Figure (cartoon, rainbow, N blue to C red):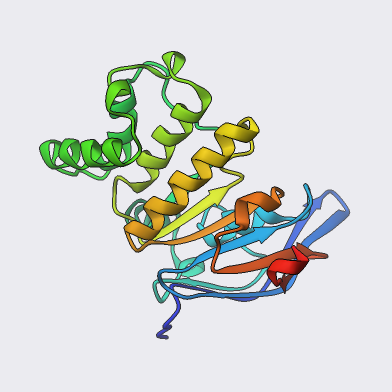
Length: 232
């Protein structure tokens, strides 16, 4: 099946079961994302935003429904295949940076490329380009403990971009930062995504984060509701 959208989620349902109890988090959810667009999804904590993002990235599987990324039905892929698919086509940015404490900034950035067998010299050059765009030139040899919160998150952004993914999935990417640093990080993230012509889906409870998104939704009662700027 061919799709013009980079992401197409159809009639997604996600139910978590614990013993005899069940909790429906997503219900009959549909989402289509055009290539090159930035889509923001807002919602209260616990509304299912992270669950949706993990489903779209193949980190979890829906109870019902289909998810296509780059025309591939990712639910049909086994664990090995979906891991390779994620490494090639999807970059993740989380609220917490998850950097490797024993590695320098540039080594952390290069890790995803090394894991898929990319040429080290080419990878290093690409990492330096990202470092320059993210204004981290003076921090490349610093380990995470020597970086500020905003610098650590920018390293995480570079790491997500190192394999030149088609799709960026960002889960509360500024949620662990103070207001000023969050604004700076948001501006850098949105600029580099647009400069590279990437597609990004960002989920957050921070309404300020979504101001520059091309499309905006609220996740409520398991479904996505399109939003106009005046009603965010």
